[in-house]
Length: 201
Image 1 (cartoon, rainbow, N blue to C red):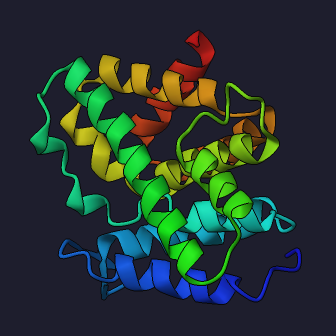
Image 2 (image 1 turned 135 degrees about the horizontal axis):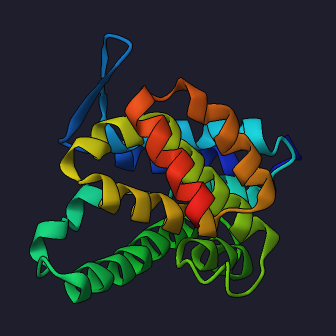
């Protein structure tokens, strides 16, 4: 990995401490984890795998992608498209503000705080930001590797195909290649969904 500042370890420790407070739990390899702490560790692991030379800002954004997410549940917004969009917009700002506050506490300057906040606000793809695209790829790969299987039973096949297609469009060609390496490990029915999605995207 690239060299990081003296503040980096302190920021990561505080992000992890915040996520360790998640009351929601997830079992993985016979061990119980706070859900968002486990997610953040998976994001970091995949980022290291996907881009060993990731910038310091990208490493922080990946670790904080879901910081304290449980404090802003989807159920507090109308269960329609507008409600979902409003929730996602507010959630992204919450993640950005929460992470920037932690970074300032450990000594990062305003420019670095704003850089990480911008990545978490998800304006990155429109700005053709390489770090932003890489973060998007890692988000999608973590979803495919760990969350797609438990997610799938809640949706019909046409809906799943649509979701995979939308995910596919967010990814770079390099991200596509990594996803195709993961896909064969999926159950046969979900592998068929992915194949249908990408051939009709």
